Length: 200
Image 1 (cartoon, rainbow, N blue to C red):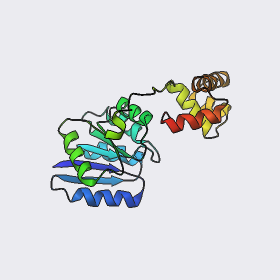
Image 2: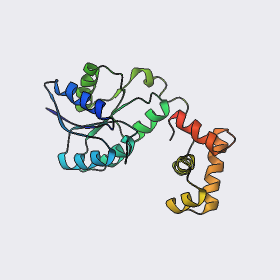
Image 3: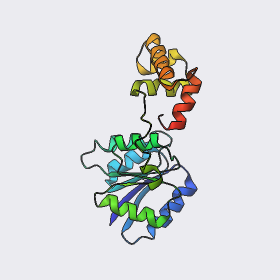
Image 4: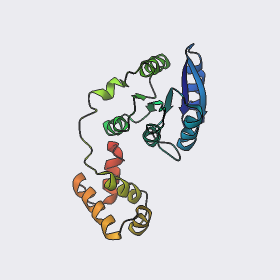
């Protein structure tokens, strides 16, 4: 049996996925949770073979879950199932060690096949994204990304500095660098563009 932990914050979709995957004779859903923190806890306790997770979730994102699970003694293989059909997200997912990246409109039979492939040691990337996955590299450094994300959410430079352990001047420098790299006029435009590209 392929033991699967499912992490999806939309309750209706989570229930539908559990019902559909439970019809497969070789797949067992060991837990279904609604946020990243719960996914990490259950993964640690249950040691599933696979974790199927969305990217955007409360608490930890699916990518953060993947990064942390990779440090477990017996890490599960992570499958991203998302609505974000953006090359930037795909690149970040692969960098985080994700073994499959599929879109939520994938037929359930294809999803089950993908889970079997990943369980057997393979990788699966949605065909629509595979071709463009390495086009348009993310120009942002991790620190620039952190600062820009917080600024775009309306956090002041002073609060960002406090949260990240930086000086206010350093925060302003990171914002200035991000704005310059993205070729936009201000932090709001930089945030919108980076979000649209899947770089945040």
